Image (cartoon, rainbow, N blue to C red):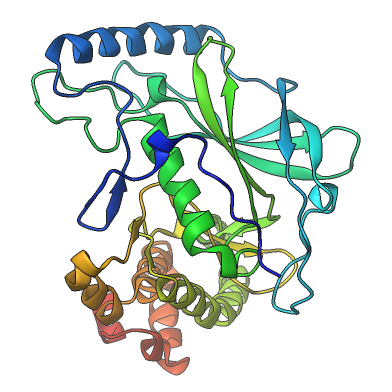
Length: 337
C-alpha cells in the first residue's frame, strides 16, 4: 500500500498556474495592489522583529492530528513511523534545531526552520519543516513582481505538499522521507505558519560527509572514499526514481541528500522549490532526462571532495579513474582537475 493522499488545506492552495514547471499558488496578498503590498511588507517586518524577540526553542510544542496509515511490506521501504500507524492527535515537542532561525544580520533571511521534535508519550521523533513568511526574503517594493511566486510561506509549503502527495507517494519511505502532512500552527510571534511533518531519517548529508572528509587524516580520507564509492549508484538511482515520478528537484545539492545510518541508500529531501512535469513544459522534461539530476549532485560531491583533499588530491584523482567514477557521469572526470 502507498502513503495516503492528503487533502490540500484549502481551495486556494490548488495551483492557479505553472511558471515553467513550478506550481504557483494564490499569493497571500493581492500583488497587483501596491498599497496592499506595502501594508503586507510592513506586517512582515513587524512579525520578523517579533520572531527574533520570541524565537522557537527546545520544549516549544503544538498538537496536530495525523490520519491512520496502512504500512507497506515492500522490502525496499523503511518502516512507517510506528506512532502514526493508527492515526490520532499527537503533541510534537521541539528537541533540537537542525536549521534554527538565524537572522543575525539586517538582510538575513531563510526559507525555513528545521527542527527534530519528540512525539509526546513515545520514543519516536519526527522532522518539522516550518515555513513562515516573515523570515523569507522580504519583497523589494521597487520591483513590481519581486515576490509574486516564491516569497510566501504558502507557496513553498504548498509546493512541497503537492509534490509529496500527488507525485512522490510511490517512493516515500524509499528515496524520499515519509510525509505525514502539513498543518497550520501559530508561532510564538503570533504568526500563522505552515509546518510539514516528515520522517526523521537518522544519518548524514553528503555535505556533512564532505566536511568529515576534509578534517580526516590520510587513512580517514581513504576510508571516506570507500564509503563514497558505495554511495554513487544509490544517489543516481534515487534521483532517477524522483525524475520518473515527474518531479524536478531543482535544488540539487549535497546538503539535500541524506545517507541513512541504517544502510547505504540515498534519501533526497527539500522539495519546496521543485517543479513537476506537465504537457506544457516538455522542453524541461527533455533537459532533465539528458542531464540527470543524480549526475549533477555526484559531480558536485566529487568536486567538493576534490577541493577538500589538500595533499591527498592526486590520490583522490587517481581513485576517480580506478573506480571508474566517470561511468556515473556524462562528462569525463578529467574535468575534476
